[in-house]
Amino acid sequence: MGEEKKKHSFLRFIIKTLIAGGIAYAGYLVYKKTQPQEDPWAESYWEEATVDTEETADTAQTPETNE
Image (tube, rainbow, N blue to C red; front, side):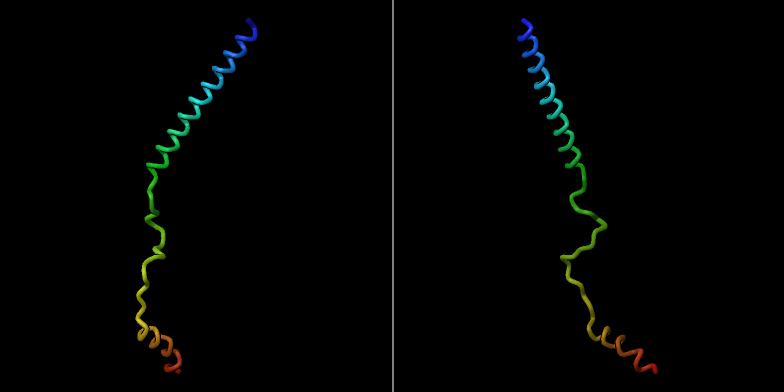
């Protein structure tokens, strides 16, 4: 009889552990789903930068012409 109680207590421990793990995993999934998918403050590396080459060339020569 003593061995059967040990088997049942171990089985209960396994079942309770699996249930607790399942609940924790479900909570993790809910947490991840509620997080934003993109960072709204992150820089957009994929967008093309528009630079006016004539204007940058003029500003690069401005200090030399002022002397």
